[in-house]
Length: 384
Ligand SMILES: *Cc1c(COP(=O)(O)O)cnc(C)c1O
Image (cartoon, helix red, strand yellow):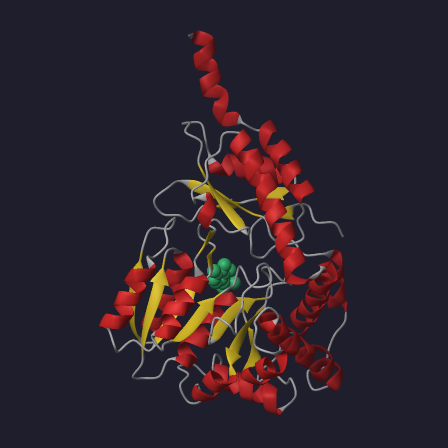
């Protein structure tokens, strides 16, 4: 079956036919075919991916890090890490420059975890010295959470810089790398990241339904008894998977997990993270060049922009109507994303998933056909 349109909306995002194909059979969650054949290899591969570019040897790394798979959308995995990592007497600092950073703070508030935040505008970075000062001033802070790529705007936060400061201050670091892991190199072990959270249906190009947490074993062991939720207890989920060779505590999203295994295989086939990153950069550059040529402005400066999703300011015309643009492009075979940046009316175009520079070219052609918001200018010019 052919998709009626390409999703430029991560996530979910467009997946390959071969990923979807793997969902046509059923799996028994008690059987070795599933646990040893699907779940355990996935857990291993995620650890390998996280450590591939770190200088730590893979043997050390494999004993140092482990993966926990978690049912639900990405937020469930974030909530499970936040709710399980921070002890009753702990305090969380959240770095915020968009909706996903805000969501982490909101999760902490829901769970009655002591939380403070540093917040800047969605197109800006929190200054490194402000982070260092905050950690120096408030000795009660035990954990720091940050978002790598803020999908709100597409801004890529300076993870290396922040990680060095957080680790130098001796704090536990949690990174929401939902929309970046698998699409850009992250030196998880070298940076000392304690918990990295991502999901199946972003850069790894699986289908939605599960997330995962790659964490230091030493930190996972500390999570015992800390969870504020039974189903989102990261420690129990990990312990069950470890002790029972890949068994999930509660019904596992078997089809999603099998599709994820295929998505990981396709990532390797493409040439790994490096090759995928190159494709995303090519998608992004093709899009940005074309959009600028058509007079669109980016919300995020080029030096802070990720290759995953881009945000464009609405054209300066009273005739511009996002819903109308959305419908025109959908008709042409592309679904785009409404904006999420609060201060600027904008829309977003994602360039991850089973999407190639040729698709970006086709989108630009489609967009050029539908510049309905320019009619007013044209009329003015005629009457002038
Ligand atoms: C997609 C995403 C999430 C998770 O969102 P869900 O809708 O729960 O899958 C979290 N953080 C970031 C940065 C994301 O891009």
